[in-house]
Amino acid sequence: MEIQVKNAPVMEYDAIVIPFSDEKTLTVPVPSEVKEPVEAALAAGKLGCTCGSTYALDLYMEGRFVKAVLVQLGDGSATNREVFLAMAKALKSCKEAKAAVTMILLDNAKEITGNAATAKKICELPFLVSYQFNAYKSVPVVNGMKTAVIVSEMEELEETAAEAENVAESTMLARDLINHPSMYMTPEKLGEEAKTLAAELGIDVTVYDKAQIEEMKMGAFLSVAKGAADEPRVIVLRYNGGEPGEAPVALVGKGVMFDSGGYSLKSKMATMHDDMGGAAAVIGAIRAIALQKLPVNVIAVVAACENRVSGDAYVPGDILFSMNGKTIEMLNADAEGRLTLADAITYAIRKEGAGAIIDIATLTGAAKGAVGGRSAAVLSNDDELYEEVLEASRISCEKIWRLPADKELFPVLQSEVADIKNSNPGNTMGGGTIVAGLFLQEFVESHPWVHVDMAPVNWAADGNAYCIHGATGYGVSLLYETVKIIAE
Ligand code: BES
Ligand code: MN
Ligand code: ZN
Image (cartoon, rainbow, N blue to C red; front, side, top):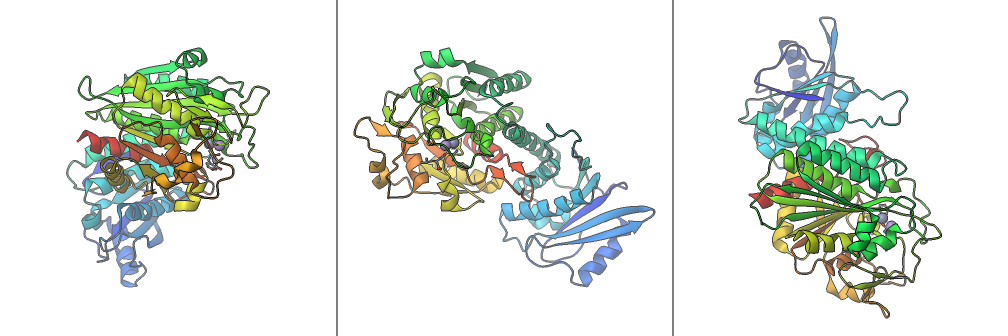
């Protein structure tokens, strides 16, 4: 996929997307051959009034077929995400029409699309919509989308489009990392991917092997990793765009390459190679941050392992010695993510001198029950950092919803034999997502912290408006925009 920015319509195209405000009029020059049928459709009231309404015309002219998609963006009251989804729907129908060249007349709804945040997300869409995962297909799925021509006179749109391309490519990298099954994407392989990326970006990278992780006494993480034949890795990427010595923002991603549940075995685990969506998000985000040369120091930290069953695996009742010094009574082997993250967070604090900490993880199935399948659930100990993530969420069109870090639920995690327990099988209090967050909060010390539980939005079994079946790449854009706000 290639994106071009032009200030006038091009002659050669297969599909044309025309956004409208509630005025429903053509305000920009359109190719003469589509003008008449589009105006006729508008006059006949074919286009609805609410954001997301579309009307498609299949035109045959001069020996070729052209698809024209009219898309309503509303009266200006829609959110950035609603506009993004409306445009996604229009582009998806161009993909289904097998259009190689799609032209988008961005300025026709200038009141709505004429700001950098909205334009940027629209420029990401051709990439996100045309993404395919063909690594294991004997015959690759080809959707034919090749070029998106954005027709607009907006200032600095070329820079905006280039930024969008970086973020979208980084999101697609995250999708790839997640979509590979764990038989291929092992902790070692993820480490190699990080090294390759770091070399391309010219940033710092360290990948610790099992012996080095043992030396660092990351006992909680090592216990989770113990049951797997593939050995764990701790992967650290460092981007130094800020002042020397300035504490880096730490992006900590859950990297459970496969989650069987361990001895607390899951009954459904067909997609559990997606349990490293957080890892993919922080790797994708640091790529975009480095390519955009944001003036800030950032690290991405991933404690990568598999949660497996074997003669050596950890079992309920085990007491784990975390890197932080706290002992953890392990009562559910399927509450493994918080154990890996606890040590990853401690690593970021002790070994990297982290400032603010943002962790992102497919942590709890309960998150979907709490906020539904279109948002991540968030907890925080710092309103200011949370507000920055919230603003980034509006810009990135990746939704979050905050849950309370309710201290009254903390007794659920109190242990008779250790400092804390990882899970409470007899818990009648509910709030599984909150409890998981409270567990992590024990390890962030006094650092400003936001926890993003992305379990509801990491995987789209039926695809969505801007994504085929599989990993969505959620979090790359959210974290990129967050760090951009922090850097300002
Ligand atoms: N990776 C899972 C959470 C998950 C489940 C994500 C389903 C996406 C879909 C996590 O490690 C887990 O198993 N969490 C448990 C926690 C429980 C044992 C306290 C859960 O949600 O059931
Ligand atoms: Mn689990
Ligand atoms: Zn898990």
